[in-house]
Length: 309
Image 1 (tube, rainbow, N blue to C red):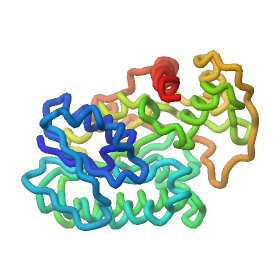
Image 2 (image 1 turned 135 degrees about the vertical axis):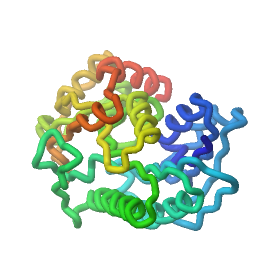
Image 3 (image 1 turned 30 degrees about the vertical axis):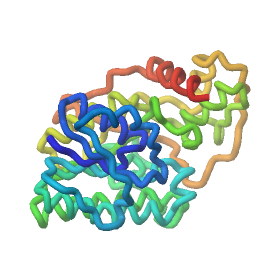
Image 4 (image 1 turned 90 degrees about the vertical axis):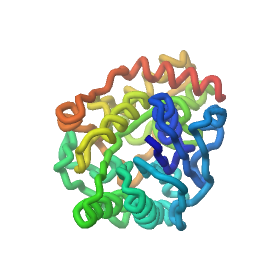
């Protein structure tokens, strides 16, 4: 296949570029480098089947030649980023999705949307199945990301129904691994950075809120399987094993052999208390489930952060 991956220089995008190249496909990565990093894809430039275009996908997009698939992964994705850039976050979810869908329609390509568990908001149902409509504060500070993705899903399904386009929607749950940005702001990079530097590890609230963390290699394999399937409705991809934020902090401290102390800070506005995917659809339709355990994945991630820091 010849595929376009928007957000291709980001954490997930760069891992997807690698996977598609490894599977023998030709990859065009597109990124405006707002949160993506060219260092994430430096090692791919010597591959003749890889190319990079620096571009904002909210503007007109032109790609010469045929495309078999278009994967829309461009967006700020951490609270630090979408609170810093609220308008670009909304624009990439709305205008960007519209532009990229138009390109996929023109090329008669399969369109894949990177959606998120954040569309469920602060859920009142746990674990969250795809049938759950969510509990979202539309005007809260996190609403810029939640609603951008909810709109993107609506636009994607409208294109599927009206234009008969083949679409895939992956609802991505918390993912971690190599190439997360040190200043990303999410729990794993925060705790890793603090532990490696022997600084206090900051846990928000009492630490009882839960997360379910999927290692990046598991996530991208699920995304690949979904793309090759014929499932047009949203599919959760994530690891259903829950861990409290406090347990995560203690595990990272142990893996790092850190002298850091754990300190508490107030819980941010609308921070979800539970986040856990129901992955029965992925198990049944994609024959997919995560393979890498949390401790093993964190050890690999720690090695990366230690090298970076």
